[in-house]
Each structure stands twice: as structure tokens, then as C-alpha cells.
Image (tube, rainbow, N blue to C red):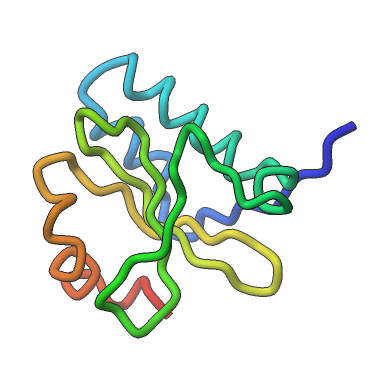
Amino acid sequence: MAEIKVLLDEYGVIFDAHKQLPSDKLRIGFIEALAELENNECHRTRNFPKTRLHRVTGIEQAIYRADIDKISGWRIHVQYSNKEIHLKDVVKGSRHDNVVQVIKSKKGRYE
């Protein structure tokens, strides 16, 4: 059995994604992205083919972005703490380019 990482959803990101994502295709992509983030093998090899997980630049904290869908621009923001993944936000495709502004607008969520 594959080892999985713990995903914590303190801010209701999964519920927000279900409400905000405009199509079933993006909702399925969100579930696939969560599955990849949970997969310990992806973390061990640092290979994230679906989500292209990478660190956000321009921010002091270690905040990471994962694609839900590269074309539409929808993203998930996560942080790592105590070997757990904390879901922080779902970012609309129209706002993904202003990543620093998005993070600063909800800085209470980011440690």
C-alpha cells in the first residue's frame, strides 16, 4: 500500500473549491491534484507531473502552488508543517498571476 501524506483543510478549501470551480472537469482535476499532493512517492522523488508543485517566489514564508489545471490557471496554495500539508486557498484562474497580492489579501491564513 502506498504511503500517504496528511492533508489538513483548516479553512474549508475543499468545500470552497467545490463551490467556486466552474465545471466538473475542474472539480475532477482538483481531486486528482489532492491525490497527487497526498502521494508520498511524489514528495520523495520531487516529481509532480499533474500539479507542477513549486514554491512561490517573492514571499518570505514557504508557500507552494499546485496547478488544478494549467490552461485555466486555477491553483491550490499549500504550506508544509510538521510533515503535514496544510491547504490554504484555491486561487481563481483570473487571479493566479497576482500571487503575492492574493497571499497578502488573506495573510491570516498563511503562517
